[in-house]
Image (cartoon, rainbow, N blue to C red; front, side, top):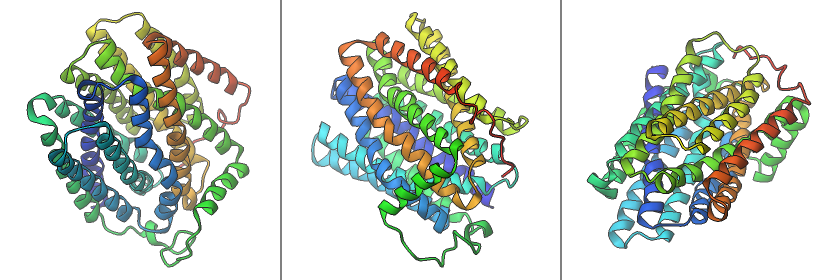
Amino acid sequence: MLRNALYPAVGLIYISNGMQVVLIAWLALSVLELTPISVGLLMAAMLLPQVGLLPLTGRLADRYEPTRLAKVGCAGLSVSHILMVAALHITSLNTAVLVVYALCLGFSTALFLPAKDKAAVQLLPNRLQRALSLSSAFQFTGVAIGTLFAGFVDEIGVTGVLIVQFLLSALAAVYWGLIPAHVSFIEHGPNKVADVKKPSIGAIYAHGIAMMKRSKALSQLVVLCAFNGFMQMGFAVVLFPVLGFSHWDFNSTQYAWMQASFSAGAIAVYIANAYRKPQQYPGQSVLFCLLYTAGIAYAITRGPTLFGSYGLIFLWGAVAGYSASMSRVLLYSVTSNNMRGRAAALYQMVLLGFAPVGSIVCGLLLEFMGVHQALYTLLAANVMVFFAFLLSRELWSVKQASA
């Protein structure tokens, strides 16, 4: 029952998320005609609430049943979508309305992320790589379906897309409610429900720092995560819509296929990871993904054809998916079970904490120097960080945990 309900619960919310990716980019660039800097600030507004809340929600995922927390997050997302529908009927679309919508999405997503990962790890004891990979495969399958559906925004309208997102998020909340309490969620010990002592936000941040001090591998992973948040996620959320809508002159349908290509690459990797032999040293895979990303960025600067661009975006998705999958395996391999909710929250907090800065920097580069210069910056930074991590063998030597 747990497994059968969790996969649709993850997939449905990410169908809505995929629609959101296309919708916000289309509204920002095609309807409001925002500059790249403004797009960067908009994406930063969507990510910042998650940074502030993730330490608390990670603690909650360790203290209570993560399925309940995920259900609340899905309900919050559904309310955000229906409030956006109401706002568009009361007033016309403007930048302020879009920013408030982005903030609401960020708050609700912060509740969902650590709970989703904590629940996924309970699915397949002793098969950590498969549990995380299958959960992510459903996630990106949902994103791919959502992006393709949102490509018809010109035909069905913004309100139609938002109503579908509302229904999907509400249905996902129902599925999370169907998942029964699992013994590992409520067992006695550090994460038992009866422990009602609530630490302050400052104590939660201090606890995350203490975790890093106790583990050199975790501290290095957090540094790498900060770079990936800044350079991979932060750049991508601004670079992709500008690359698609402005540089390649895509319409909403073509941009939807571009995003679907990225998701398809990630899906292929996640499914392969779920059924392949576990990667003994996941840290090595994560670091080599930096070089692969640099190569893809260089190829894009050479002016690919339409189908060539889709192919490169597919490869980018595959590399990003493999890096994310192995990063989470690496994270869970250096932390104990009763700390994994907080470790996942720390990971997401750092990733998302640096992403808004990367979004703004990418917006500045695109505004004043152009798409090619932004891609060359991405290329150079990835190569330099790869060689910097060659100086330390800490991440290279971490073996994958069994659970």
